[in-house]
Image (tube, rainbow, N blue to C red; front, side, top):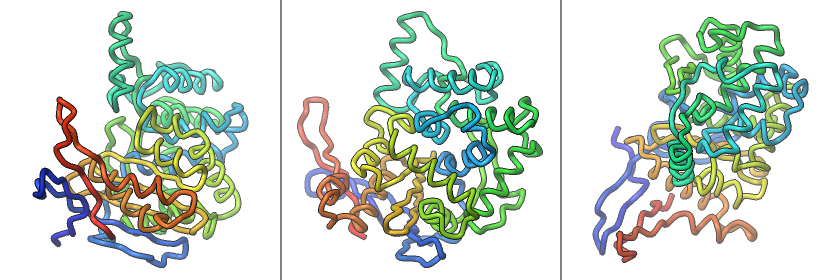
Length: 336
């Protein structure tokens, strides 16, 4: 299937490049408000499923046992920029459970997402510091995994193995939230070595509608989902970082919009007051395309909103300037 063009890059008066993709906007009962492209085939949401992976942390009582507030819960759902506050919070989470950086199994890398990460990397290098696993952009998720395992009496080594009790719980949680079975051939390995589970965009969108409203979830899960989503919206910097798109959108949304990026051009999201979930994927995996696709969806849903409309609509175009600061064109969402 040749998916529709959803993002255009304009130079002068000519469309220079395009991005195609698929989008699903669905309510908690599975009714599709609108969709484009292929929304029924499985895709890997990658980090866009982190809130689902964090549910056992709250449901198990671990978050309460270790005194986690919105900051820690947001980081547990994060693909962060490895800024100092991110790494420090991951370390704090581990310490609360009597664990350490060496217990992580995500691997170490230099800060790598966005301009703030580049700044953090330069500052570390100047100070002669080496990156640790705390700087992995998924360290908050992994700290959450370990804290949940420790509190629940599970072993904390080899916690990423698909046979580990925690990972089996996450598969069951994903199936419950999306309403889709996840066979073994729909389980891959993510960049941070955690299992990554495939689901359809429609299933993911319905799942995030359920997470945003509690509809179709048993009470403990509904309460935990609400707590996690509200934490991310209250502390969006910890879920991404300085000038990151996820952070900007949730800052604009002021508690009304949840969104999460995933590698290879994926976004999930929810607008709880509308009872809607969002899932999308850019065909070529480009993050810039996924951002503009999300902007287009939000404009369609909230473009006329008295409080948010103007700021949301501004996201649908992005000027492109050259090194002399001369405007050469723009990137824009194709109207949905």
